[in-house]
Image (cartoon, rainbow, N blue to C red; front, side, top):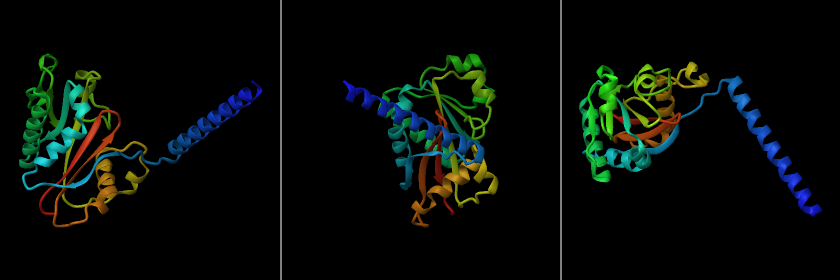
Length: 217
């Protein structure tokens, strides 16, 4: 019995020490202004000639999120040829996986709250790349969304952007900083300059960012 008490005291002491270390680290991060990085979900991968592997990888990696979310906020406006193909292929892949037709609201910022609420699951809302996420206060999300949604911002890039000093010290990354820092973090894995790559990152609980390299890099 005495040995059990001593063991419990040691375990309690270790737990208290661990909690203190974690708290100290968090305080250090807050006061030193170290950026909170995005989390990698899909590592840089070669883009197939028809781009179809982007949609297949995306739906597979976010299977649970796609399955449960009523709304998908796509940061994909203004549309380009590449983004249009990705949206179409992702919808096809989704419908193959879940046997359910995707419902679109093409310009969600112009939709009424009644139109959004009437949109049946799965409802994909098209927004600008600056309006679909919560890196900053987002009035559209606060007004129209409950907890049953995710955001998926499409980031098209070609050159490796410069990471500014301001981005290095931001505690919560703005979109431009998230883009530059994320690309810099993976650039060594994009080994073949003649090929195009895509990758997926997560920031916050519901915000996802799909990076797709454009031709001409």
